[in-house]
Length: 145
Image 1 (cartoon, rainbow, N blue to C red):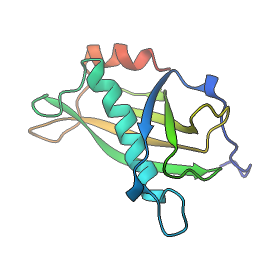
Image 2: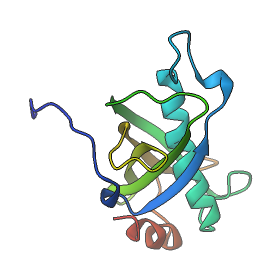
Image 3: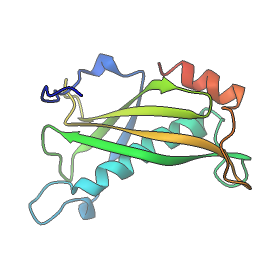
Image 4: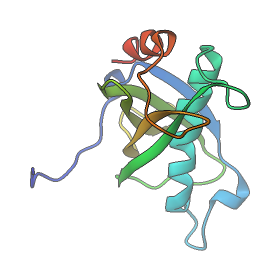
């Protein structure tokens, strides 16, 4: 395990971007976005990308991703009414799991204000048992590597 202090990432570290609008309710009593909101943005950025690419059907798809691990490093505060740009990349793709990494940037900023990851294990919706990544999903994920 590395003991080096995590550092922000530059924009060119990410393969796709999604704009996220902050809301008044995202701020906490200290005047910045509450830490739990960042995890919601991770989900929003990745799942919206997968839906737009046609490889995730949240209502009726046979295969769904379940989060089994998350982490976030914070480098600079974000707050309403900023616009956030979420960068997405795939760090690892296994037979049934994917590690997504998401960098959150203040609009136009060169470095991440926060960076995190989560791991999805893809499962059969009915049995909740791991299944191999469907080929169309694998192709979309490959473009994010």
